[in-house]
Length: 497
Ligand code: TRP
Ligand code: ZN
Image (spheres, rainbow, N blue to C red):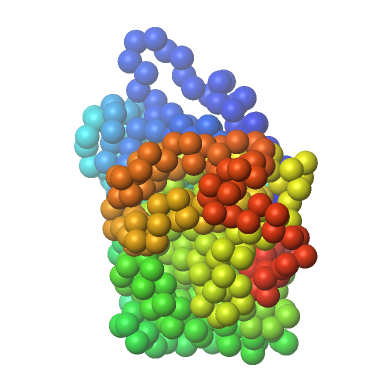
């Protein structure tokens, strides 16, 4: 399950100690991290971004990316200097129109020193001009820039932006986006939101995509390649834009048979989660060799391998569920990942029940029964899993089990009210596991600390009596595997290559 050695957190923690200027009177340098203990160097301090305007050109043959990022932000403290998270080669930085000093590093920090310090609360416009071959850049020994035979894709979690635009790379700082990329005629560009225009001039076609709702940096995506784009509108009125690499080979049919059901599944999920929160929905399937799917906002990333054994609506449900749980409402810190993955997995369970392939209760019983007490599975705390186990199967499966335990404790009326109320309560913002517990207590009128502690925060298997209290079948046999099980679990194939 672990896709890389978790150097970013550890290494960055050490280097931060050296990087933070320790001047006693009036430290006005913006912090090089936003303060997330899982990833101390991710994001930055001292400002809040409202909009990213990316105007780029990409040449698939050589993997050359060049252009300008214009960032609209507001300072949250006096700033003598501040950081953006970025890995590419910068040629010029301007702050409020004036050329600024800057340094870059291979540890994703672009440090900018404006000509004159910035005052707290001031609007600021930052222009970064850059050019690079992203596939030659790595930080901490990894890359999230995925080359394809006909282009490239930027999609990963918890970081992907460093390889294509400078940002405050943490979900706490959400912003709107205009992504404009010129590519040689015959090549397509896929990104988030709605396609505003695509026009050809002198052999190059410029695609203009707009995300008009706040979006976390890791949910911004860019794909360049030869795509077949399909459009439509769901019965419920949500505009749909999907894209398929023209090079999907044997997986093409199954990919379309799955992703073309996006409109139907968005409408179905709206019944549980409330109105779809964005201006469009859809997915894209690039010709990558990765294995994962990712909930990139409005335009889900699907690896072709997700469809290697046939159509898969379960993974589509998972990624679409994230549009409410993870995208519209984002986590406050990466330790809150259960808010994303527990609920996306639970949506797959609801779909399983809808399809007659196993009820949510049967799936919960199976998770509980198929992992003996000494299984390492139970040592992962979904409510605070540690960076190493952030995407461990336990976050998903034990995470969804916890949701079934909650449902059984508070009853269906309160449970489904919470499921629908939560995305509205925190729409376009951020929230934590503790916020969710408080909200569930408020809606259900029940104290829930003990239940959350047992199912999300103990590094051990809840006892048979805890399971009985939560109306799970403590002796559920590992052999009673719900029909949907394999497909539901296959979503977790995040390994590359
Ligand atoms: N959030 C993704 C999902 O559950 C899975 C995921 C975890 C992932 N880590 C990743 C995807 C890294 C891509 C890269 O759908
Ligand atoms: Zn997920």
